[in-house]
Structure formats: C-alpha cells, structure tokens
Length: 537
Image (cartoon, rainbow, N blue to C red):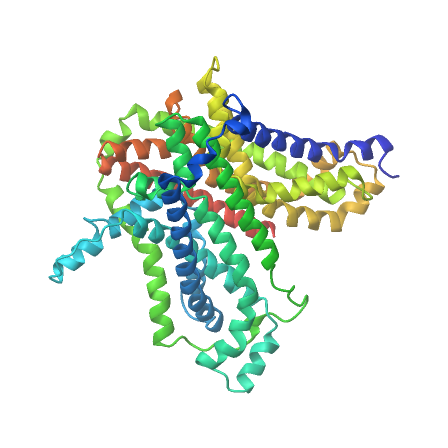
C-alpha cells in the first residue's frame, strides 16, 4: 500500500505555504519602506548617500565590523588550537560548553554585565585605582561596541574552529606525533592549513552579525556619532520620523548584507571532511602547559566576569521594589506570551519546511525548485534581513491601524519566529532525517497520511527534538529588542524594553535586577534545550 495521489499532492503544500507566507511578509515590509512616500524609489533621497552623516554611519559600521571580526578571529584561533590539542584535563567540557553561552544571552543582559566589569565604575577601573593608576575605562563608543562584539563572537568562532579540528582523522595528528611536530611547527604544518579554508566562512558569519547588531550599538554606541545602519533606521523612524531616510538606509543595509553574503559564497568553505574517518579524539592529548592554561583561564575569565558582575549587581538590587512593580510583571507576562507564540509558530513552520524538503517532492519540478530557493532564503534570513528592517516596514504600515497594540504584538511574534526559524531547522532537520531513514518506507508502505504520520510517527519519535527547537526559539525570542523597540510606543513593554527604559531613567540597580531575572530564565531554558537536543540526537 502506497500513499494516494491526493496525499502525494498535499504533501508539499505546507512547506510551500510557509515559504510563500514568509516571503510575502518580508516583501510587504520591504515594499512599505521603499514606497512609503509618493514617487516610490524615485523619491528616495539618494543625494544624502554622499552626505557627511551617511559617511559617518558607513565608516563606523565598517570600522567596528572589521575590528570585531579581526579580534574575534585572532583570539579564537589559539583558543581552538589549545582545546584541540589538550582534551583530557579537568574542566575542559565545562569550558567548551561555556563557549556557547554568550551567543544565547540576550544582548542587553550581556551589556549590563560588561558595564559592571568595564564601565567607568566597574571592576577594571577599581583595579586601576587600587594600583594607583589615574585612568578611567570608558566602554561607550567604538571600543565598547567592539568589546561587546568580541565577547559574543570570539567564543562562537572558537567553537566552530574546534569542531573543524575535532572532525579531522586521528591519523593526521598521529603522523605529526611521529614526526615530532610540536608548538609553532605543529600549528604551521598541521593546524593552520586545516583551519585556513574555514576562516572566510567564520569571518563572514561574524561580519554579518556585527553589521546587523542593534542592541549593542544602541546602548554602547554613546550617541549619533557612533551609529550603525540599523540604529540609524531606528532613529530615523522613532525620533525623526523620516521614512524616506529609513528606506534609503534599509536599501544600503540590504545591499551591504547581500554583498557580504555573495563574497562569503565566493570564498566558499573547506572541502567535506572524510566521512567515517577516526575522530581526532583518539590522537595526541598531553596535559596543558602553563601557556595553554593561562590562555584558557583568560578566555574563561573574559566570559565569566561580566556574568558574575551582573549576578552580584542584580543580587544587590532592591527586589522588594522590583517585585512590587506592576510594570515588571506586565513586561514579564508580555515577553513570555510573545516568546511562547513565536516558539510555537517557528517550530510549526520548521516542521512543515523540513517535512516538505525530505518527502514533499518525488522528482524535480518547478515547485520543488521554488521551494528549494525559499528554504535556503529562510536559512539565511536572520543574517540578510535583520529584525529592525522588517519591523521598520511594518511600523510604517501600522501607524493608522485601529488596534495598534494587538497588531504590534502579532507582528513581533512573526518577526521573532522568522528570526528563530534557522536555528529551529538545525534542530529538526537531522532528527527528521533519521526518522525518514528508519521508518520512511514503512510509513509509505502503510499508506499513512500526513496527519496520521505526524500523530503516529513524527510526533512521538521527535518529541524531544520538537521540545528542543521550541526551547531554542523561546531563548532567542524572549530577549529580543530589535523588533519590539520600534513598537514600544504602542504600550507594549517587554522585559528588554523595560530594562532599556530603566537604564534611561538612571535606575541602574533596578535594571540590573530585571536583567538578572531575564538572564536566569534564559539560562534555564538554554540548559533544557541543550539537554533535550543531546538526548534527541
């Protein structure tokens, strides 16, 4: 018994509907920005491209991106090499897990932690005072933005590089041992050639994240003189209400992101690692020396210090006042509801996309080609089209809506779901691929419809994967500030917006307390998601 013709016809529809719906959502947002003024594209103030203001924005965007990428790569290479060489020492597993933590933290939470360490009244300034050095560290401006980006992206780059080194055949490192290669010679002959093909892709990913950075630049930029394109879009709409300028900045943002993605594709990646080769975990693994130990301690301290600073500052906050604030509970409820809805929507869309990719088309057709293009676009949407750009377009459409608060909440849910979708796909696709390899033919032989297939097969077998994807989407959504910042005027206050408002009112102690509560919630979700993902695999 095989699936009926009607069932085979229905199979690709959910995935095609998701691609069409998300594509329409993005197209409407971009169209609203580009055609917000009479005359359409022709009315955009292209003469302002050469203005000093635009020049400063582009210069700052490219400068902070170049510095952030360079410092992240330079710090990640030795850390990845040290962790790859030394695999049997106490605390290694905890350090590798620690590398994944910064990227999962809400940017605003990390910013408050960095202020506790590097701010004018932070730990570093206090240490300099104790040593008799008459200097104050300023975290605002270019140096603060770069520091925060390195905090987020150095661990990410190190973890990606470590994964590439650990996938190499053990014979490569065993041969290096036999030849007596160690230290610099080992790096130059073995590790550098293995890492070099992957550096362009990792650098490109970090560059896209830095160009699309919003929260960090908004809070640490120090003013209009240190603004990226995304922050300038926000300022053009919220403070100046200049839709033509916002549309022009959006065009420039998309062109810059598209150029980087194109260059990244040209740079390509490394050749596929040899399938089935013995992993490098069987190879050389001496105890770390003092240089390696110092390097790992510095890295761990660089990551842990801001988190510890935030924990101490948040613990000293006046919690009785925070817990008695109706704004806190309203913001917490708003954040939770938006995150849950975004997580459910992202997980459902991810399942529809993966199911259509794996079993929706039996042979190449125009529809399958269209779906393939849409699937790839969804995978890179978080890089190419940041939330602030989508929010800007819908912000213009929402101005005269009869129920702006409710509609704004719905739009934030959709934007957050879209931004989380690439990460949900990375969780669901391997799991569903394993299910299809094991049970796909049996399900087809039994003639199970898509609904019964989900109820009887995909749902029970992939329950932990669905839960992990949902938890990851929650983590990414609950701490989002990009889309929500534009809709703050509609009486819609989430926890990140509350933190930002408290900081703007110089209530830093209360802001630290709310940030600590948000950080603990996100950390708990991250631990649950990581555990579920590991069990599912």
